[in-house]
Length: 520
Image 1 (cartoon, rainbow, N blue to C red):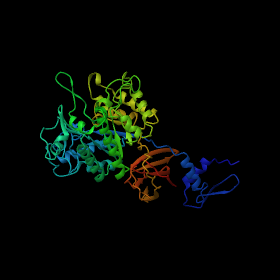
Image 2 (cartoon, rainbow, N blue to C red):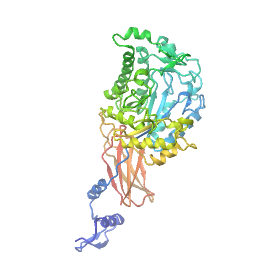
Image 3 (cartoon, one colour):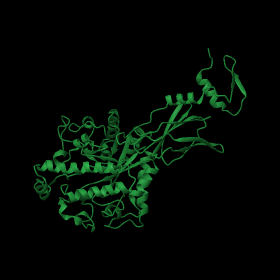
Image 4 (tube, rainbow, N blue to C red):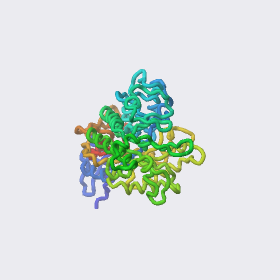
């Protein structure tokens, strides 16, 4: 019987290397052990390494960056360009430090633009005056995309398809504002201006704006929130004011009643956007974050606002028809809420997800900032993330909004990082868009003086968005996730490392076969 276990032989091999042919011992049958004759072939070592390779965390971890009313960025209208850039970098650095892997950046809050557009005016919330461009000129969306990708973070562009004016901005409108371009399709409703979803001109304009961004920018997703038809406004006597779309209804509705006609208008927008995006850039994800309750009574016992009847948002249909790649219902209630329990609502949305799209619920993390009965402690949000992880079909969370996780006395960001986001994660795989997995990368061990590093080179034409790096040291594994532009893995501080395993990940989260480098 061999008195040397395999673990001892592996250890001897890794210490000895291949520099000399000196006999360093004998096996039980007196066969000499020679340093430059490995006892265990590389293919056996590789098989053992891969057998014990740990799973990588797969989770969508995102945060909304809201620009309307300068909620998150920039901190006020008209900041100097260098301060706008510095604030954006601060937000992205914070997301990276917290091991988040996506930001959802609001670039069209009110028929305006946080990017260089020939279709709509620059946003007041950016420049402080319509329709001035940043001076000195830069494109905030291009800048944010480049810096997010530099950190290995996805950027999803968030659009409001119909809101045309918010009362936090001045009344003066730019010459190319939608109210001036097609006034018959833009209505004043309460203190806001709203594009009529029944207007084909307005709908086609919004789709054109969104597709212009898809065409020109390297975004990872297109995102809509819960604003379709506006939330209702009441008059001085408390009666609901009807949205003034009767002229379009009379011309277009045919046999449909008002509610069904309005829902069809929104359905057409959602389906049309999905098809347009997939025709042009199928890898760009389309996501919606509707109001978290489809209708009261679904599931049983749920009470509250009826988005189906009031926003004319048949969100269950969009999910069932597969008109989205990811779905982020705004589950903005506590775990123990009696009428809107977080867990029961999430479970119900899972049941509706018959096309197995990504389900990434939205969390009202900013309630940490509110006072009185609306205030939450950090433990509430932590509990919601942990519950989401117990539901296999729900694979991530989106937090509203960035300001809630910035450094502050309430410690929300610190609590998330320490309790649920302490290790990095890759976005879940998107498997229904027809993209192939990337090829395994080429990897070589290089030396620079006494330091070691591994050089990486992608194979094939597929873009690498991230690398999954596994380093084995003393039988333990460390997992890192690096942005795809990185081509070097330093090893000089890991002289005890025995193996390095790398997988390439494309923009849909699909990973390559592993490439293994045995470190001698």
